Image (cartoon, rainbow, N blue to C red):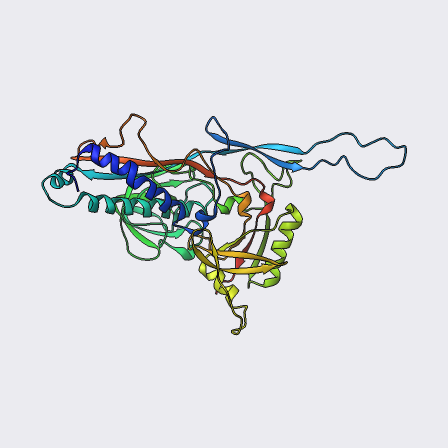
Length: 398
């Protein structure tokens, strides 16, 4: 390896590692791998803007021989707006590391490989969590007030059963809010001691019920399935409670008990009746899928289906359709989603890229013998028609 200079490292980041990072991030998690990337949706201001159909042309029907023709009509459309959200990751390389490589020391490629692997894994993990959220960014909630202490007990912001395992990790930097009031900011996680307890690097005072966010991420994460697939509430500037927008509602059934094939078939068929399209995937965590497996006789042969990205998945048959079942530990407990992936575009200005608007990929880190590079993306998950999706909630997991 040629000795490291700023030009050497910048060229490696741009021409060698960037394509690898783009592929790895886009294909590393099963749900994200299935989404269609859309760069053709216009951005107005800081929002993706597109039209959704809310009613069809009804200037049709039978009539008497000499009766007037129906008044000309047309399809009804509403404008949907989806804010472009920014996700970013920062890598750092020290000047001493670069100097060592010039003098036959440690390999620059080894150092960059480690940095790129960490960056890829951290971005993929955080993006995947966001895909199952509501855009608010809540990681968890404080369970029991903390008064000038470093140990925080929490429940998960989605389901208590998930605890800290996928949401709070060492080195994360957090903000704590009680409603709109910021109670602590820039607090670094020093360790995770159990499924519900983590420690921080300084004494904090926060209230019971305070919500926990990544630093600066409150209310600006990408939209996720938990808010998109819902029977009520505003989304993308439209609301099913508004006259003329009633179709902007997903099928939703609170089972509050055991999963049944009848409930699954009804979900698929009702979504088709409401929207004219069947769901194209099922999405859940492992516990919900285990409940589905429990419905089968031991002699049933299950043949996995290979979906985009090389993932092998179980399938569910409904009305002659083979629907792939996507497993994800970030999916909320007790919930089975029925999304139509064709109506879930990943709207993006461009793929992940390095920040280099000033002509440089590497930037001095103030107060350190180091340079950093910023990988970022401007995008969001939206839906073209909310009625094409559905979910079952309150399911007993296997």
